[in-house]
Image (tube, rainbow, N blue to C red):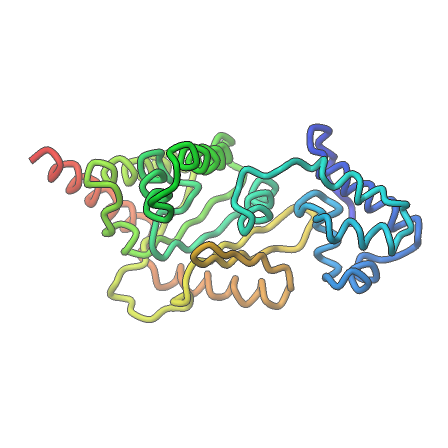
Length: 277
């Protein structure tokens, strides 16, 4: 599987390239190495192209399987400590490599689209006794993810927002007005696609909660499921395909992009008017 050009500023990508060389030197397939590491061949491919980081546990096992004399164990720490919570590290790093990101947000606005005031309210609600410095760090990391939006076309971003996201008042009505206007501006700039899933739909294909799907140029797709302080990144092709179908069913049930924009802008105007009334 050909890899994309390495980013010399990314220790993770360079370490992944070394993994590919070491594996091929042993005349071992990705699936063969994955079997010995108790991960899938897809997972090995994602480590090799830098989509997923090589953990210390895996690095130790790789050194044993490939006979690399502790090279990966010594160097896995050079990938850098992530600024994201542990359960979200791999998903955040995969986002940065993705060609397409599709996400269903059931309760709060997608992290990639959050404004600072909104993000702070979310983190403060989750960690009510945390020092302000912790909230600052979490907020800064979340806003940093939005740098993905700087490119006019890549990645393709498609969001389905449950109507609860639009109606749940987080941080007050002025915060909501600003947050929704930000999303509307991105839609009108044709940077993102957004559909709203109205309450009237009732039961739907992702009633279980948050879903994110990512596709890549030279790696299999990933599905990321998230709960309260937990996250699971799935690379099994059949599982990813099943979640992709769920997302397709969501988009079929949701309002059209134009009607969704109308709802979002109407709600933003209501929040702004109520705040100044």
